[in-house]
Image 1 (cartoon, one colour):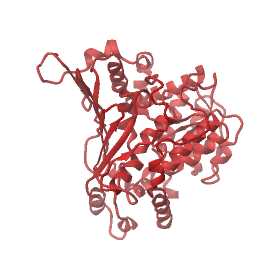
Image 2: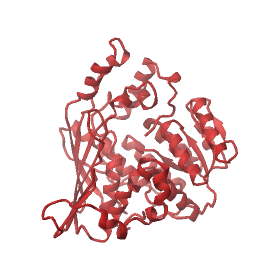
Image 3: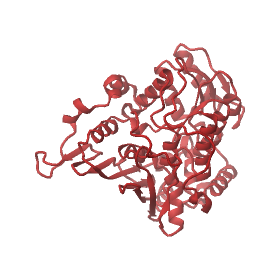
Image 4: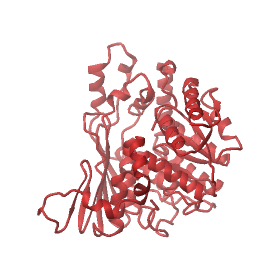
Length: 453
């Protein structure tokens, strides 16, 4: 989700940008064998419902302390997590993180700033329990694999990985090392998302039928910036066509539908509009002669996919970061008794006053509010972080570590929610043909029930 460094002094050259593009091109090549791997054989034991070892004072290492990484660090420190090591390719960013840790009353962490592979020295330490990874997307897999192979749990920013091969590597390695690989999908911990999850569990919407999810976020200015995510995120739009960022919208809807916990995503189809938005923004804001004028943007501005679950439910999934649009994850879930939709939050239950008018959700809050928000909501709301969801996510992760609980979402969830990137590209390459979801749980999706949020 975030950059390994936001220091403009190390902005990539045109050659480096092209090299990143070539890496992404190779990574995005479609593999018929990967598509066919509906069940991926492995001798390893499942990580489903596997608890953390009880760790009263978990020791944390961070890889990447740019914008997002620094925010995450703040929420860990606010909850008295011990941070002992920091890695970033920009020494200034690592030193700033160190100052925050010392200011929080902790010992100065060991810094790793000797280049893009110095993270390998961090994960090799013998005094870490969890490694937090907040780097550009193409680094997520190698860093998480290295963490697990060195005996550490990995907490990874979204998306978990970008190719089917990498998703399976993460699943296989989590199982073989007995270490968790968790995707830090904060939207699952939002106030509305956890409230609606309780409404679904209590049958207030009836039998579920459909959901809608999205990531609609105008990121044009950020992507054309000379720092932060502008150093790398735009490159992905030059390499492939599909949904580049599915998990913020999809994760909560997957939880409502008990995906990997009684149901599973079966197959999907995908369509994209022309790619016009980034080129139009460049025309209006980028001087002639800038190297950005050599870029060709191929990611369709609005990607729309339709997912079918094994039990027959449907999910509409949308992605657009290249055009003017109010921020929206849609966050809709409908059933035989009613429907909830977000942005703004509203609900309609069969028989409620107002005939066919939407109603407010306020009357449901007192009885159906998540236990996490009831306990930590006041602190979360004052902490910042997308209305407090980030604080709640870190609180819950640390609680699971400290009390020896299974994580709320595991490597199978992270892989499943990240897979639409690869699958949308595959569907588009085949004329919007249906493509099958792999079963990362290896047939165990119907052997457990709801997530523990």
